[in-house]
Image (cartoon, rainbow, N blue to C red; front, side):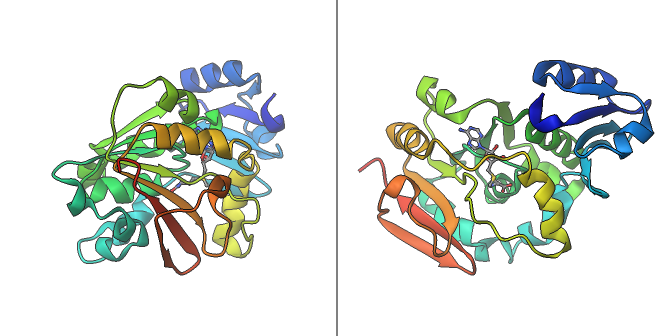
Length: 251
Ligand SMILES: C[S@@+](CC[C@H](N)C(=O)[O-])C[C@H]1O[C@@H](n2cnc3c(N)ncnc32)[C@H](O)[C@@H]1O
């Protein structure tokens, strides 16, 4: 069973999705609200969608909180967009987000005009992401960007090694071991961090991405963190606590 997680199917939730996921990851399935509420970690499928709960907290992946960041005038000051420079990649550029997580960085790229393929390998995070994309497609401020986002539940190393697709940009943001944990929002994200394993395949991720020869490979790191797999980038763009290491692979 994955991290001892329980899967809860509420009567008004997507029972089929709950059953399929529980069976795939070998988790116990409950239909009892009280059992779900007392579980250490629970993936809930209820009338509002899919949520992760535990320790009195509940987390729905929610892309609506990104709306202010994707507004014209704000988007271009996002450090990811400054590093990606979409205008240098032609019209309708393509991107692969090989570590999609809850899809926030992918949304920024899609809002900037990229057609984005999102890969996520963790089945619980994938369920949260899928649900949040479904809900976001009905939100007028998000629907245009979401229409350019395609989700694939997979290990991106295998995906990149097996695909003949070409991408203008590949983004890697594997979990960094020393993320700080403070404040209410960060506390909620600790629920997610209970699922994520620190990256143990840095070399494989880097070389699979580099070998696909994107015009640009971006790696998100903490501002003062070491290079992924020790690879020195062509240049870096730093802002606040985050750094993007940028590689040109099509030289
Ligand atoms: C730090 S989070 C990414 C956050 C994301 N950039 C966002 O904006 O929400 C890292 C995610 O990458 C996923 N991941 C790590 N290695 C992966 C791989 N080889 N294939 C697919 N997903 C991977 C983890 O499961 C985790 O959800």
